[in-house]
Image (cartoon, rainbow, N blue to C red; front, top):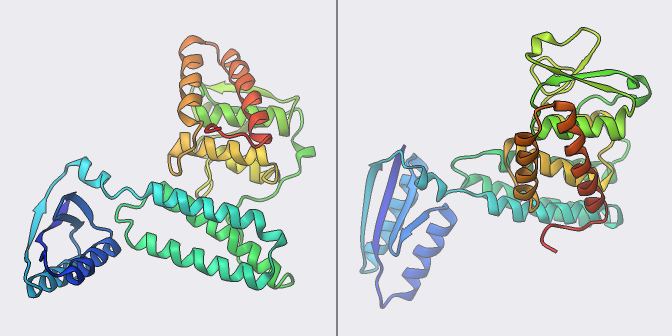
Length: 313
């Protein structure tokens, strides 16, 4: 990984030059290794930004040294982690979505434009993009879709990123199959199926996906009827497929499962839930017993989420 290292000695008597350098470095997304030492991934654009800062500081009477370095230290990449920034932006988007039904179209459009601008500015300095960026991009799509529906309800929108809608009545008393020794996404998906989609369904635990019977509904493996779709994990795919996303408790569950399965925006309850499920999985060798135990935990968690209680309260 090629890096640019800018070492500055700022002029003590020129507050304007110091502030100008600080603002430029902050806008660039530079990481601070220590006072006067700044780091950015190597790129033509970043080279130009740091060269300009170095020149400006030198002309103002300070000293500047721009160096190139190669490093594979994961700690350096961690300095550019924007997850917390995306989390704050996501919370602003959630508030906007919650208020959208009561907000005038013109006011909503202004808010969405502001959020889009903030998102694009953050993306510009997210040098190692990951799940958090993808999640917030999806949240922004949701907001823009709500805005289009409010502003021009008769106009067709772009193809939805969500799976095709299915009728629950056609999915009753079925056999659902997934890989054995289930973990978070498979356990939560099985709980969702049993509680909200097919209460009479039974589960088959597969040694390998190839063992899935033709008449069974597979989930959470390649080629399954229900699995990861675009940026959605299997639990979210099932929620959207069966039109359950309006349930606030399931919406909170979906964020939790997404984070535990693929990362992204942190969820306060995640460490405790992961520890609890790990204890169950290590203690119970029978997958039916494991699902029964996990389902009890999910029931209580769902009830808590449905009442709007967070892990921080």
